[in-house]
Length: 70
Length: 258
Image (cartoon, rainbow over all chains, first blue to last red; front, side, top):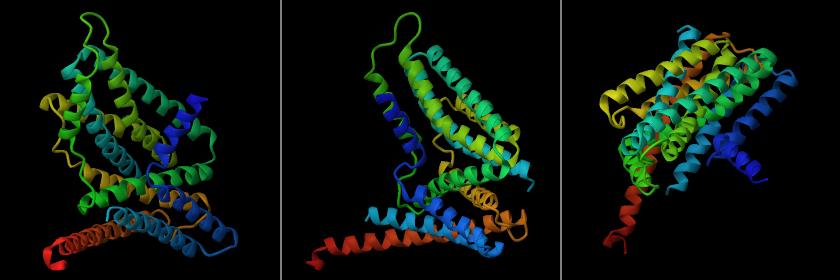
């Protein structure tokens, strides 16, 4: 089981690393965009939600990282 | 800029950054221990990485429907792109130390000196293992970007070509310089690659969910312009935030503050 844990740890570190918000955030944004498409929201609005969500996740991570350094 | 050129440039830059980091490790091992075993380790890692790109790239491009592929790959590109971009913003604003290849090279040599001596004859497995691991771990990020970017754009060949070209260029320059490439603007390259990955990840993942982008492919240009502008603002914002913290810290530790 040790190799399985090491394998999992490697991929966790590779994809999530030390910034979990940058892994979870985009998935949440995509879930919201998927819901907006599913309920028939116009494409322009869904695109705006996507871009706004990505920008918000990046901004949140920067705030968290600069706060951690203070 | 045509998509094929964007693909080649993006994978070239991403690969160049990782190759510079791998070169530091390879040079440290080769110069302090044994070149033959080091180069065998590099070759073994390169074969594994090429195999991963060919097998996974071909399998993904052949068997996964394009919308699902763009959704999954786009999501990973956004995740990866934001990781590179936020780190580059923090480094550009002075909130995080820049990558120092000379310091990493010196630390690697100190670590290697603690290892068992090089055998008089035959294979030096320490050289092989350290070079293999270094190239494989740095190269995995490149392989990941090549497969995801290449498969989504339907341009696995140009993506692999861009990455391979960077490996050749960095190797040639490294051999000529005979030292770590400390003057390569790594952070600037990471900034650009982070922007590219985030832009295409945003576009493809939303497209995979069925979003019709206004202007179709032209939306990519708009996204790049928007993300560049916001990244510049972010660099300034973080720099001001760090500066104000330093001013407050200095004021609170000065005798007048008591």
